[in-house]
Length: 249
Picture: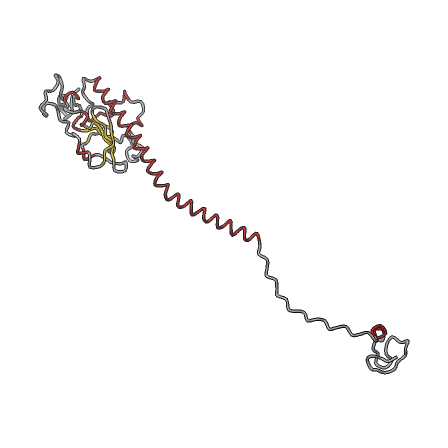
């Protein structure tokens, strides 16, 4: 038997060549068989791209939606907050106007009980005590500086007989001001605390909001019927002067 490695004769029953020691077992099976074709070259393979994480995509989407939502909330807040503030101030103005109207009604009740004379200026708020059970009526919701009263009485009508007025609907009786408990004032003391408007109550009992600068349209001097050319009613006129400058009831 010829050794396929060294091509020398060796023992036919041996498993290895006695000359070179090469294995003779494979040569018994492959001797005479055609050689297998060479294996085709293996093309280089590209590394597979890393798979995207579904969780990361979800977080990105959620984060984007959250940012958009926050931006929308910010825009809406910038638009709506001034609207809410304006509406709140309007509600306070309405509440204040109601206060002025009720106090004006009480002033009329006082005049009816006192010969048509309004309260004296130095005690006008206190004189209304028996007619008003809730002192909070004297406080404007938008007034944070006046502890007792947000309203003053028109100095020209203090103690005045309402029958002597030429046009009571044009004569201010009380108005928004500051620290007004038992205090009087005039047009210079008006406080337009509601977005440039002030609430004013008139002798005839009605009340309205007046823009700053429009107060001069009204009769702050309380023109009487005699001075306007009309004859006053019998018994009308202001109360007599007291020694301290006030009027006697």
